[in-house]
Image (cartoon, rainbow, N blue to C red; front, side, top):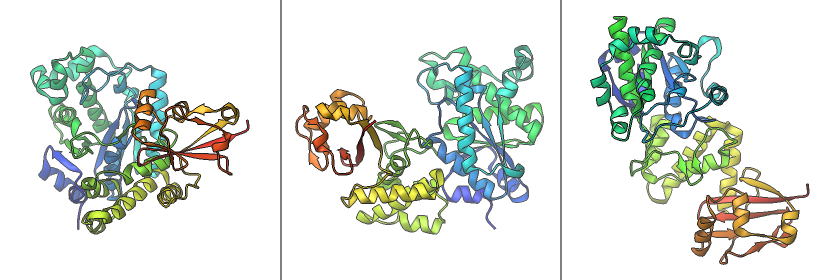
Amino acid sequence: MSTAFDVLMERGFIEQTTHENEIKEMFEKEQVTFYIGFDPTAESLTAGHFVTVMAMAHMQQAGHRPIALIGGGTTMIGDPSGKSDMRKMMTTEQINANAENFKKQLSKLIDFSDGKAIMVNNADWLLNINYIEFLREVGVHFSVNRMLSAECYKSRYEKGLTFLEFNYMLMQSYDFLELNKKHNCVLQLGGNDQWSNILGGVELIRRKENKPAFGMTFKLLTTSEGKKMGKTEKGAVWLDPNKTSPYDFYQYWRNIEDVKVKECLSLLTFLPMEEVNRLGALEGAKINQAKEVLAYEVTKIVHGEQEAQKAETAAKSLFMGGAKSGSIPTTELDQSIFEEGIDIISLMDKANLIQSRSEARRLILQGGVSVNDNKVNDVNVTITLSDFKDDDTIMIKKGKKVYHQIKCVNQ
């Protein structure tokens, strides 16, 4: 019978482990309490978090108990891992508001009923810590020389590593120690960029408590060029539908590179591996079938089946030339704007389709902008009421894949 470890290994999650044989044996013999930390540095979780959340879900389905740790305390320090510059300092109010959003999003994906999973906030123990006690109890177990050799610090060392950030590894390690004491948590999981921090916690428990503790890291989603996935021209791909609409979310996965389809099907869906392998083996134009399945399945997990169906219908209707669906991203603007007319660049700006006016000019001159399927060739084109269809909408197409509906309303 396969264990959670076998499932994660087969699906390609696992990158590194601290004590592989002991971890395998533990999964075979007992229910494992494990944790993953999420620092609320933004209003929403992103596609980048999604791999670890899916791993958490797979492990819960296998009977193990997740702890979702919200980093209300560690966010005040800022994790230097993978960062070329120090993180922006956030207020307590910002952090708390973001933490509440994270809790709501995680609750949609992880079952917290009847103690099947628990959610904690490290602000509960980190904010009231006695610093002298902390140094004597925790700091004594850390070698500065070893910390400086860790990848998370090494990449920042030459540019300037603040003492504030230098404390981050100790804080995260202390989290693991607290969860080990309070909840018998024996395993910390995280993205591959968290390896050094996870090692710190494992070694702290083993030295201080003389108890077993383990760490495991997961694959980071990257493009074929090695860049982190989950970024678009508009910025991050968010799990919050108010920041990334279900339609845009669907389209992101529908349009990923061919070579990444099988990997994403494996990591980001619950499809059986037989189906993942079948879809991943499709070639040429047929790979688009696999992309549609991927986009639908991921959108269904994050936003629900109804939103996934609406996004799929909207995408297909646009492809077939029909552009009628409430799932297409839409901006409502008062008809007074169009009575005298608005230039196409200003309209695209109002719809958040461009990051700058110069970008819009370049797109138009390169033939990359259409209105109602008519290519815009002049940067000075003005959109008026006469351009709207019977349903009081116009459709702007940017590039090959971005569609946005403008609806004229009488406010």
